[in-house]
Length: 262
Image 1 (cartoon, rainbow, N blue to C red):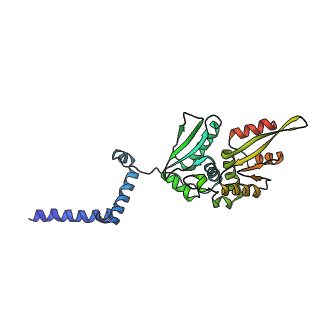
Image 2 (image 1 turned 180 degrees about the vertical axis):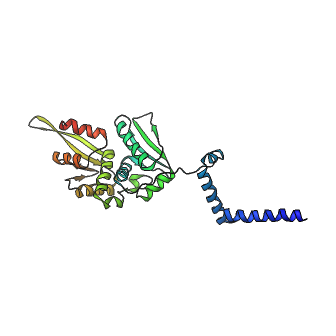
Image 3 (image 1 turned 30 degrees about the horizontal axis):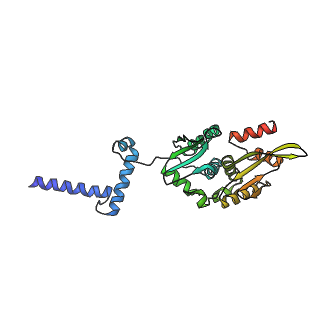
């Protein structure tokens, strides 16, 4: 009889201790607490988590506001996308952007410490940098990006970019290197063919077009909006852009150097 009492008392105390640690499994609060404790345990023991078939979020680095983060925001506004809550993609041309992709991937690693893979398309030159990370998507949403269709949602530059002129420059660089660039404008005069480089940015988002135009004006560039295009025509202004804002996409650097003989 005494032995049975001791065993019952041990079970009772064990049950109370379990409720203290994990919450009452019969209540929503208890289940939430138990789930949190279990998740924290598996985060500390990822090998056990994989063996148990338990899916845990991948930890990432959470960077502070910086020129590099502002440039990455520009890249995402240009060629990036977040189709859902768990994944982001950055689209590129396999032939033209091979070197630029290496630069983007280095930013991803440096800023967020995340892994990525390249998804190539068989029927075209298109490809995507793909990152699967709920934490990264949540972070970028908090930083002002919007998930889903960028045209339908009429995306815009996050407000924190305007806090510093260097953030504006960096974000502009990411936008121009993805959805803009240098283009050779050709024309004839008195039977002779001429050509000059112009800088152009294209977007179907009206708020984003206005923001890019405002940033260029904040930097004292003479830029013009025509439909879904923003252009800088002046050769001196294009040269000043190269000097003060610059490019990271090698195809734009190559065009500039070849045209001006640098």
